[in-house]
Structure formats: structure tokens, C-alpha cells
Image (tube, rainbow, N blue to C red; front, side):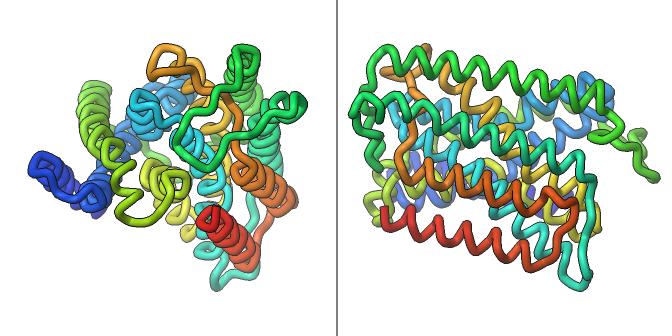
Length: 359
């Protein structure tokens, strides 16, 4: 049993604390820890199902379920009208994967080695998708600024932008999803040998059966839904008790919790000198959030929650997205890294943390 599954004990504790009316901050912290093992279980079940279903269907499985924990958490937040928290978690997932996860992976993998190399085509494609993601996510704000409007404040309150901005957000969401589908075709069909190389020692005979994978996935998704409802319900009160804004909590807590299992896998891969895999997980996951999770949430917001969610971010979020996309693209484009480059990514993440805390 993976050590992370031992954290599952926090799930019943969180439910008990919530039922007993414990302090919101305690409920939030315990439930956030409880999300981690359920997200890890979903990730493992998805990997086994993908191994059984082949590369093409496996890619679709990973798209559908790989970011399920973030989607589930965000859906509960949308239902409660916490749209700025949802957008903050999207930004947090993108910059967290691109800076925190990749930075930690590079430091761990590069320590004791002169340099680590990885496939340049893979890295340039993934970083290009990430750069496209962050630029596209920031463009709808131009409509608001061009009309002398105000970008969202750093709060959890929905700011009305008008039907045209909402319509533009839907159009951008559809374009992003279409781009992601094209990226899947590129990585799974026309350039499969680059993105899905056959490594010696790969043995899929140990993979779970399809039945076991599906049942595990369903059970883990149900557990994520239950514990996410508890966590999201406590965000508002917990942020007041702790003294942190919901904006900061969304960017640096909710996002990290939802991606915890991917973070661990990327760092372990780098430590084993599998940097192509580590870069693919870290940078690719950040791009996935922007190209798949964010647009899906925009479309679902028309069905869930009090009002649609426009893809209009506040100035701090825009700065964070652009900084992450530009710096990561510059560092990985040469196909090699040293541990100091990982330190640089972690330093930028820490600077953004200070900026968002002050905000």
C-alpha cells in the first residue's frame, strides 16, 4: 500500500468534525488532507485503466479522469457561488505545476548530477501548449479593460461583466477544448513515439483489471465528492479564522491539494532520472488545467451556480500566469536542466506567494 493512502484516516475524522460543528479552520485543514489520498487513488486507478485500454483510449481516460479531483472540488465551489475561488484554483494549478512541481523535480533530480536531459520535441510542445494556455486565459480581460471596466477584485464575490464577456468566455472555452483535442491527436497518433515511448522493463501484465480499475475509480470519485463538499463548505469561515483571503487559499491550498498525487509522481520520476516523464507530468498537467479543466468549468457554470463564470482574471492572477508560462518555456526549451534552474522556478513561485499573500 502506498504511504499516501494512510492519510485516508482523515476522511472520517473530517466528517465527524463537520457533523460536530468544530471550528471551520480545523474542518478545512483536516478535509484538505483527506482529499489527498482519494485523489491519489483516482490517479492510480486511471493509470491502470489506461495501461489496459491501450495508448489511444488511455489518453482519453487520462483526459477524462486525470484532473477529476480538481473538477469535483471546483464544481462544489461553483455551486456555492465561489467563482473567484474556482478561478484562483485554476491559476494555482497552472503555476503550481509549472513552477512548484517542475522546480522541485528539477532540484531533486539534478542534485548530484551535472545535468539532466529530456526530449526537446516533447518539452517544446508541452511548454508551447502551456504558453498558449496562459496567454489565452488572460486575453478575455482585454475586453473588460478596453471598455474601461474593472477586472475582478481579490475576493470571492462574482463581478458581473455582461453577456458579451460571458459569450466571449464560452467561445474561448470551445477553442481551448478544440486545441486540446488536437494536442491529443498529435501526441497519441502522429507523434506517439515521442510522447509514449516504450521503455525497457515496462510490464502492463501487473495492471489491474478493467473491472477493478473502474470500480476503484468510481469509489474514489465518490469519496472525493463527499470530502470536497466538506472542504468547500468550510472555505469562507476558515479563511476568516485563519486570516487568509479566499483568493490565497484557492491559489495555494486548494490547487496543491487537488494535484498532490501528480506532484509526488513527477518528483519521483525526476529522482530516477526520467526527466522526460517529469517534464511531461509537470508542464503537461499545467497545460491540461488551462486547456481542459478551465473551459469545461466555464461551460458547466451555465448549469451550476447562480451565474456563469467568465474567464476574466484579476491582475495578480494574470501576472502569475504569464510569468509562469514565459519562464518555464525559456528554461526547458533547450532539452536539459540543472538543479539551479529548479531553484529559480521555486524562487519565482515563492515570490508569487508573497505577492498573492499581500494581495
